[in-house]
Length: 191
Image 1 (tube, rainbow, N blue to C red):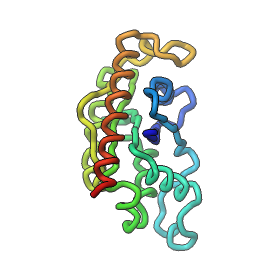
Image 2 (cartoon, helix red, strand yellow; image 1 turned 120 degrees about the vertical axis):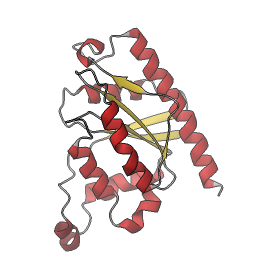
Image 3 (tube, helix red, strand yellow; image 1 turned 90 degrees about the horizontal axis):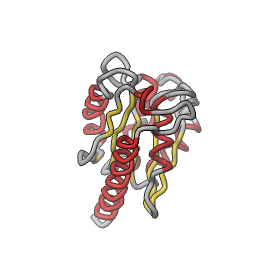
Image 4 (cartoon, one colour; image 1 turned 135 degrees about the horizontal axis):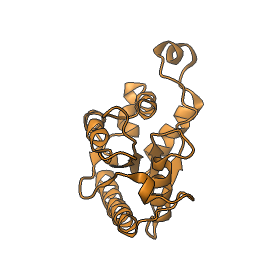
């Protein structure tokens, strides 16, 4: 079984990116589970808090889940032509202490998708994540992309994908990333 952790960079309940993550979960191929995890309870990073109180339980739990997973799917909105602060904050906590980076992130397959009501399709946000995943030693998957623009047209009032071409693109993307994540983790585990 290939296990992928899905993180959404929007906290809003009616978020198009939450809808997109749900669509990915529903389209996971047989033998693959995409487990969506929330970053809502992760506090703002503060080194003083880390030193005085240690790692928050919610962060430790998520670190363990990512470490045990075969891949990480990041569903990212685009705020002011870049990544959302709440998701960057979560990754900042997850990369603490630096000695945990190899266990949690090194060699971990990662893919990005995103939705926006605007016209950019989250291309700038997805690109902004590349230096972060490079620094953490992750393995980005570049064979497909899901950059949804005009998201109000793509999702219906129930939060379901209403556009057939987009639904097929999401399915193909998830299937491709599942194959990549499973293969990369098997290869990485044998080294």
